Image (cartoon, rainbow, N blue to C red):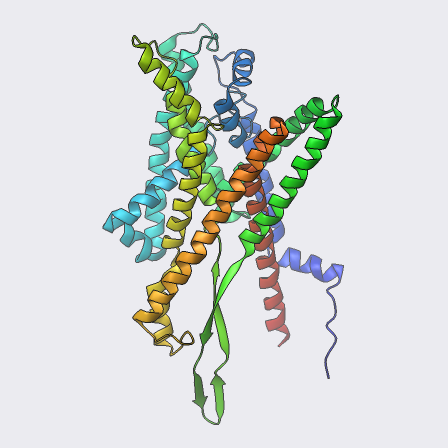
Length: 446
């Protein structure tokens, strides 16, 4: 006879909400996001914001960067560098930890203490990158033909601005780490997510202004929104899809009872890196784009050199052909990189654990053959996931060009992947907290 399961009442849900500590985590996250948004509104001293806004409106690179700083760059805020230095530093430290044995040992063998050391190295390198990027940003402002910098002492302006921008980048890094440790969600991804959300009203207003007088453009807008909606569905499928590898567990007799013998499975995610390959790919590509933009302002004696630099700058801009080719290549490479460093996706370790407990994959011998079979499965799964991310990154962007509605380019493919990915991560974390509370209640009632 089956027992009817009673649905949880609102009182039960409220008690789970309070007891699991979820409410405190969400409130803490909202407070830190509010502090970050307040810092975005504080302008850097000595900058003519009106002149910078006029310049940024015709510069694709500045507009693209501004999207991921939540408008801080467009306002030339004290937090204009945003989360960029911290993300770039994280990429570099993770990459070199694979190459340098001592750092690899910290990551894989020394547990929490090793990870804390790597985190400290990341913070120090973030400061170095923030100093460098703020100096590059000041050179960019100084090289513009517009009078963006007001008439103050150049040495004092450079020194104070670099110090303030570096401190702002460190503050954003600190907020990001606090959200990750004590709040809900990944701090860095959540800050980028909120930055993209803050730009949606502006993009919506510009789009409505564009399509309002033209019935044909209104139809194009509906087509574009339909493509965006389908892309969101595909993103959810990609984020949640898993490849299940069947595992046969041995039977064990303890006394008169037999345990085990039930088949289980190992879930391998189709997209193991989530939104991080996208974020890292953007962070890597924006550096050469920024440098080329600054170099392009220099007075070259050779006309051919100047033409080459301008052509390369155009190709490497967020709307350039070379940018998209490199973008897809980096997404694929970084997806494989993330799969290679994740502890639960190491074929040799999984094969050793299966052999240790007497489990096996049907039709495959334990040990090395199992590791080789798992490696092939992981390679195919990761390749499908990486190509899926690449397709998602291209289709909505090309749809914007085809429909001639580029005002929504800011919330195109890249932003869609990040927003949906972060939203799914938040939902999964909330479910985990509530599920943990459910288990606590179940154990108390036993």
